Image (cartoon, rainbow, N blue to C red; front, side, top):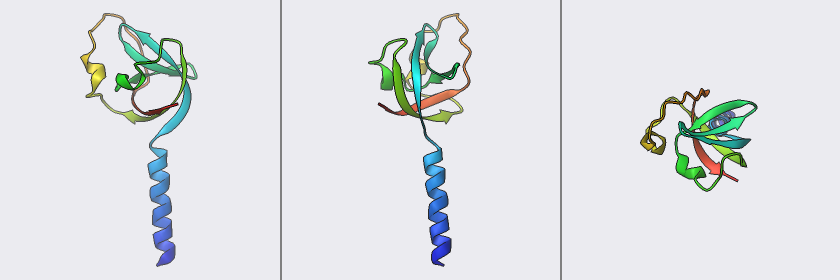
Length: 96
């Protein structure tokens, strides 16, 4: 019984910590939105207020979660007609 509880807690810990990622990234800002660039790929930031104090080109370390869609502040930005390809939406949980 103790082994199964321990195993369950271990699995839950792995799942919870696996949902967020902490990586070094470069802030990218243009008229289409705010992105984090990591390893040559851009990821669109949903909650842009988390990095509002960081300028274009600035290096940060951020924890984030992958999103399938965005219902936060990034949707309130004006629309421009520039296409900026990105991998997927992310929600920043912590910035160092």
